[in-house]
Image 1 (tube, rainbow over the protein chains, first blue to last red):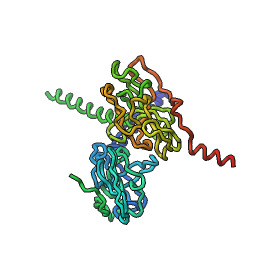
Image 2 (image 1 turned 30 degrees about the horizontal axis):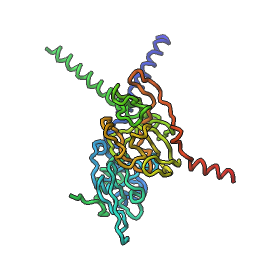
Image 3 (image 1 turned 135 degrees about the vertical axis):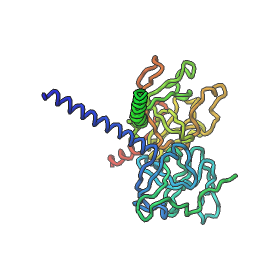
Image 4 (image 1 turned 60 degrees about the vertical axis):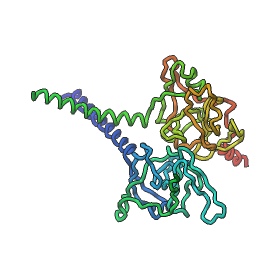
Length: 172
Length: 206
């Protein structure tokens, strides 16, 4: 066996390896982009539903099919820093009327959610910067819907309903 | 008989394995590297679609790799997911980035500072473009209504950087319009000053 043969064999194996890497890398991209991804949350804004350092699974299909509903917990890109993600609950969809005044205010103020936007709030209302401070968030910034909590193991399973009672009722 | 069944099964297996290679690779390339899109509407005349829909719309190549870290430059033509309709993409030119002071055109001629994480986009054809400037459908004149303007009323503080989809780098169709798209801002639309740049200058003077 001369050097030419050995070189051809090594080249063939390397190309084959690269081909498999590209193929499985693309399959992984499609899985994370269109099926779902694992997210580690940090911060107190979604307590008690999600506490800091929990790991959740967020599925992407609802976002691509535009089936995000009121009451869903979503992961979205932060409107003020696209490298950061926020995890909040959807309180209102486009067209809903949101009460923006606090419970202790005398005069109630309202705001309508514009077309193509959603209103997000954390479950821990006292310790959450959300749409109450930065306004409605474009739907296209949503990445996925959180459907399952994976860590810690004693809290494994589906997530609870909103404890705040702020979700806008459907007005017929 | 058995031979034909064997050949059929081989073809099916070849097709399935080819399918599982071609589809993920194509989808990944379209999502991460390059995307091709047809431009509709007249809001970017004369840079894109200069003849309207008469000779056919321009087709542009969108570079998605260059915006993976949300780095856009003033003067780029970018495609953006519409804040008004998440399933639509809009092509406009970047006029100002976060921290810039600009003077808005249109209804309420006023000055504003583009907030952090946002940027300001405008169509080149100001008389016929609903973009970061407009506050209602009043600009759409009836005789142009056929040129389906694919842009809508924005929020009046710019568009979030997280919505950027790709940078239009080349026009690839029709063949007589093959060209590379260069970044340029019309001089009357340049940002007035940049908050961050001017702040550091003041510190150095002290």
